[in-house]
Picture 1 (spheres, rainbow, N blue to C red):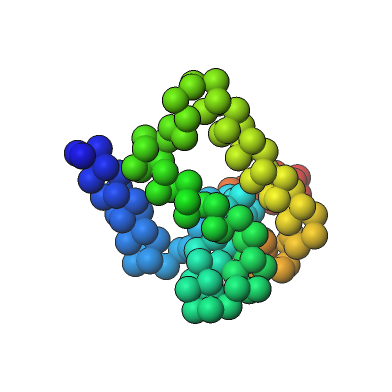
Picture 2: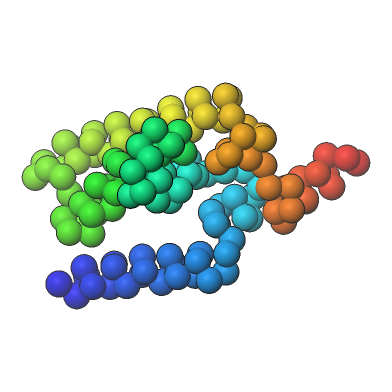
Length: 133
């Protein structure tokens, strides 16, 4: 029970930091490029407002993300009793997210939300500095 409370507490702290700092995706804020989960929060908000098509536009796997977060907290990340089955489950999930990410990067990056480029990110500025030399 303590582990569940700690997990929810850490998740709540991260969400509060993102909301109060108003930076959105931390990965995109630092690197300049969107992460594989970019758009998930906007998708969940759109879904809760009844805009299902918009939700799938922002991130087609938003529904799976919510389910996986709940499973990770409540079941300690174990979907199956067998370690081998769990490993394969998470490998398939990872491949799904990477596949969707690659398709979205090809079709939407660098100027279509939520896959837009953040040219003000520190690592992107550093990359541009080295690239221009």
